[in-house]
Image (tube, rainbow, N blue to C red):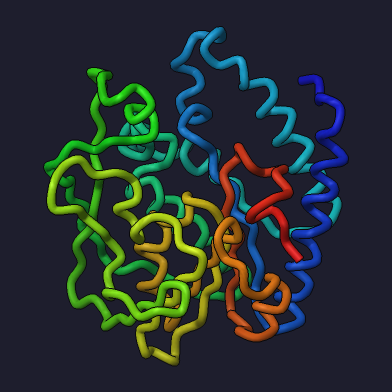
Length: 281
């Protein structure tokens, strides 16, 4: 694959920022991991004719430049592409046919892979037994929203149930809100924003279990489904979305909060985007 001009330089600039955040995390006693997530069009790429996936070569070139820069800088990362390729679950259970995000099942598989990577770094985590249930409502994903819900293709919004969930308090942008991780409207349809109520600048979930570690997760909307489950394994989970959060720079936030784990989770469409959650200082 021919790498378009600019990708190596953009990748180096992005990775320079990530390396600085990794160093600050480690200086403050934490473990850093960058998590890369494929989008729906990548995991289903072989099911489309080439003329419907003209963006494929660009994505490959971008990912190659980014991976090389991460390796050269020694930044810890995990790309979930192979995790989904090797899964025995059908892709239609892991990624929605009507939305560019993964399903809740796909997010859970990704989270398990993250925990395995963290365990190799000395952080032992596990998810409780979760029972996934489908919501019997129309799921209006990003793709069928663009088609004004006229497509015959339908998708499913997944939720989970678990026994003996820990107690929870929640702050959104400094204000106490209902301690829920699913936000289901009373009437149809539902959207991906059912997870964590959509994108929020800063969310703090506390479970009052001080023996467990603290998590800081930074990223765009792909973090939302992950967040609905990750909090179960931590004393406290904080999430930041720098498209909306206007408080401290990330480096200062880490120094002040001193999390045990810092995850930056981004989907491949924004790997080299230096704005929003790529504008790390």
